[in-house]
Image 1: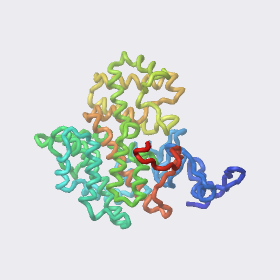
Image 2: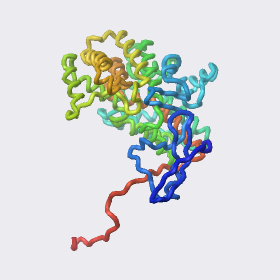
Image 3: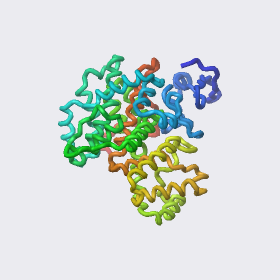
Image 4: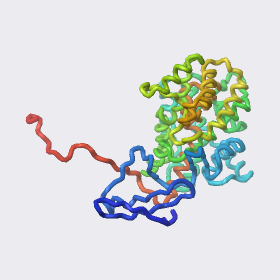
Length: 431
């Protein structure tokens, strides 16, 4: 970290404290409060850490006001249009666009790591048939540390690299197996002749009884979903991975923690919630009723899939996802599907209605990704596992960056204590 070039003055009870101010390459300045408690004896209070930088990073930058998302400086729109998921993985992991031979080597390496240990099949069968795929993934990914002992030493750079490759490569296999198990179908092994996205679709939808050919339009849409969800700066699940990592936990445990956090409906479950909302609306003629409810401050109903906590303008990922949604719907010819009809009409209204425009409630990435996954045939229970597959490389990149940080300390947030002060224990007969 570069030396600060300016300071901020904080005055408490008449005494002033000089706090260093760091200037990033992009984004707002950051006041360094690391020595505040030692010097002034006070903490800062920031529920949700919405105004607190927990680390410095060179991976992903978001400007919510401009609707900008950069991975290592590359705009997400360009990556989604011109690149593909595994190349984006390389960019996130290593910081630059690979040359042709570097990319080929990287793709070959990950392709050869896609199978999981055969004994892990028994682990899947220990779950109930109706277990949510995310519950299965949390358990199976955490259990990888019991199967891959040669890549759990976080102090060994080579082991960290092997663990990174294994997690990125095996996550689609684990997610597909969780899906197959939940619907009572046999596991489908990965195929090295298919692309990352096509292989995932094949493992999810192929059956031993007949040939299954992955349509390139669907494979491209799946690849874009992976690309657009690959990393998103210090979100809840990424912060969870970093916090777990700060304790020295092995990589598989850290990523399992990230998956558990992603499971929350306010985070990874947003596209599922969006599709369930569309189904609740049911038909196009009921849309005005639900829009009126959304505008009513006294009604708890909220339109899911519109606006974003970070993006105050538009979600840059949604533009690309909308294109994929149109391509998938055209390919599959399912425009008569009531849910998708509701989605298209709601999208049209949101882009034209003054209420949506004034409040900047643009359709976000969750709105379109839910439509695409539903059209492909995925149940809503698989939406978040697919998100986890995509986000694994982001978690791994952030995990690796943190372990290489010389300023690394175990995470230990403070609190504003509002409970009882010290009091004496009273014997039970005297209470």
